[in-house]
Length: 262
Image (cartoon, rainbow, N blue to C red; front, side, top):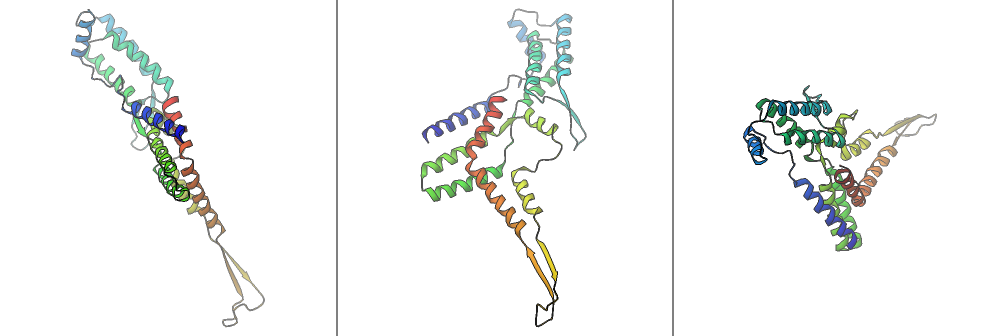
């Protein structure tokens, strides 16, 4: 339990640090900004035509690396980053362009737009499931009641907190999932609702030769089969328990994917 708590504190602390870390391109680039930068580096306050040409070439290469993302809801299209390698390559071009420090207003406008794209791609957005957190909360109460152990309850609560923080994925990773998804995800709760919603009560009707109801003389036998509904409810309860009890493993996987791999 002590080892698990140390792991929870470490993951939560690192997640908070990354989430609140300022992006290097989250900066307003103006002529005055680059003129001051050039003076501090012992250069002329105004960039030369050769330097402007270099920056333009770098920004063209950056634009070529970006992906056009189509928003099917609004019909608009955007230049975005969808992969980590893509971001690293684009960031390399942008750093070189910033280092040259062109003071041309038109070039600065383009540079600022690309800086905005790269900064946004690194912004962290919640990509988890509140339903999983609710399931974990229910499991925490259940385990705490059955085991009467406060440390276990604290451990589960810490795992839920890590799951929440570890679910803040970079925007480019979320966009990548959307761009490569052939259908709209219903999420954890939606999936369980679909399981229950698709379950059916099957009615069997049998005609018999003998009279079943001696009062009405009815010889039709009706039987309702609820096995699909019962099975779906069992699956839902089991899924909630598995998600709740396994919240620490789910949190560790999300932390590895969102903060180590990306």
